[in-house]
Image 1: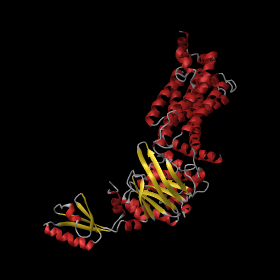
Image 2: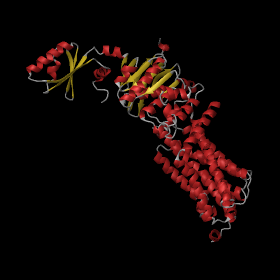
Image 3: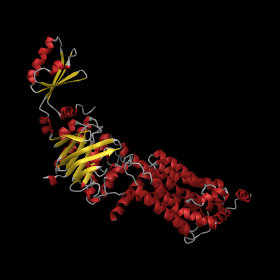
Image 4: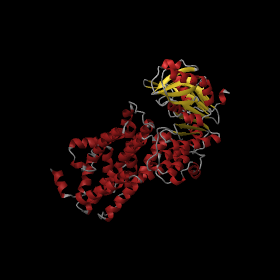
Amino acid sequence: MSHVLSHTWALTVSRMRLAMRNRAFLFFSLIMPLAFLFIYAGIFGRGRVQAVPYLLAEVLALTVMGSFWGLSVQLVTFREQGILRRFRVTPVGASAMLASSLVSNYFLTLPTIAIEFFLSRSVFHMAGLGNVLSIFILVTIGTVTFASLGLIVASVTNTMQETQIINQIIWFIFLFISGATIPFPLLPGAVQAVAVFLPATYLVSGLQRAMIDHTTLLDLGMYLASLIGCALIAFIVAAQLFRWEPESKAPRQAKVWAATAVVPFLLLGLWETVNGDLRSHAMKNLQSIREPYSMERIEH
Amino acid sequence: MVSGATIEVSDLTKRYGDVEALRGVTFSVNEGEVFGLLGPNGAGKTSTVEILEGLRTPDSGRVSVCGLEPQSSGAEFKYIVGAALQATALPDKMRVHEALDLFGSFYPHHRGTPELLKRFGLEEKRSAYYSQLSGGQKQRLALAMALVNDPRVVFLDEPTAGLDPQVRREIYDIIEELKKEKKTILLTTHYIEEAEKLCDRVAIVDHGKVIALGTPRELKERSGAVTRITVRMAKPEANGALGSLEGVTECRTEADDYLLYSTRVPRTIVALVKHLEEKNNELVSLEISAPSLEDIFLDLTGRRLRD
């Protein structure tokens, strides 16, 4: 067990170094999220101070969800280039390899989150910081969850092309029907009915509630439990389906296994559909902006 | 002495879909021996080595390395073996010393990075990215990494494939050094020169089977000690005529050359010259070469290694 931890740590340090030398990584993990912040707060928020917490929460969610994208691509690249099989000759196991993906990605996400907070305060004059503990825990668990989903994509796809296609599809769903770009209350009813089953929706909503209403961890318990459940299942499934060799193919039942990772959000979505808690929270969050143009659209 | 062998392989079979890669491979390697698997591409060398490394599972047959079964022994096995794989890479932006540090950290007992850098001539490249290394440097790094845990058994899969002759010779020197350290080494190659120069014993592999096994010298002797005479003539000759010359056991043609295998070289040459005079033909070139593993391979399979 101590070996697994020491291997994980050694791999984590190495992968963080590699990521920082990678221009694509710097662009997607640092420059793009910050560009989102300036576009959201500067253009959508029109520089108004009261809109910043709502918009920052969206940017934080996008940053966290970005973990999903990078990790699957990295793992598939390592597999395709025969890098993984070199590790297979050593005592390193699949779990250390996968855990190092999650941990290195988490450590690399934190500075971006901190910079986003810093700029929101210094450039956009955001007043408070929200419930810092809730935000920290949501970011932490969210990053691990979305990264684990990325590992699942890597484990069920056989080629980089396949990985990219699945990533695109899932990413656009996360991006446009979770409330991270278009506010949840502005989505058509049918889309909302689907959105309540997405982990992304709860991440966005949870972060907004923690930012705007200072919602405590206890009140976010359902969201957190679902994120943790999803992360655990995704990690276990990814470890079971892990492949070292470029030519080995995903077993046919792999996609069925991978689908089990959505079970926690299926349950939360059903609960949400009955209680309708999320919609009222989302509406309340949006009203905190008091953005004239968007309010008009809601009233119609 | 059956259980005394460091590596034991018996009756190994492996099939990939319709392709029978291994059809009952058997051999054993003694402690401290450099053992070569020689054969053309697709003969089953890599499949055999990758089963021994624990990267693949055989369909049937048994393998053991230092008494351990590679597929089921876990870390205990990984600690005692080192490997330079054929189809592998490191991340482009990993520095040479970082790779050695990282891989060393996986083992409780490992060699220091400075020592390895020095020994494999990589000191100047210690901070270079993997992507900046030449083919020879990458291969030296692969060998250094194979030795990072000071293993008892080292697997080298085509250690010089794709390298130019000078770099190849550098790698030979490194392997010769390992030999002095009494490491048990299993290497695969399709270069005859490599097998003859480095290996204590060689197994010639073709179509998933060991077709000959012994020291390079034994194999040569076993091939009947026929000497090859390569001749080129101004006008083409009938194969049969040359084959019936005195001492000639076999005659083949290869492009414009006639390869005469002879047990009595001086007599064959005299007969050849007489024959050419009679036919009003002229000798363009003549070369006499002692039997090599290449000839043995040709003898056993009817094909050249590098076809």
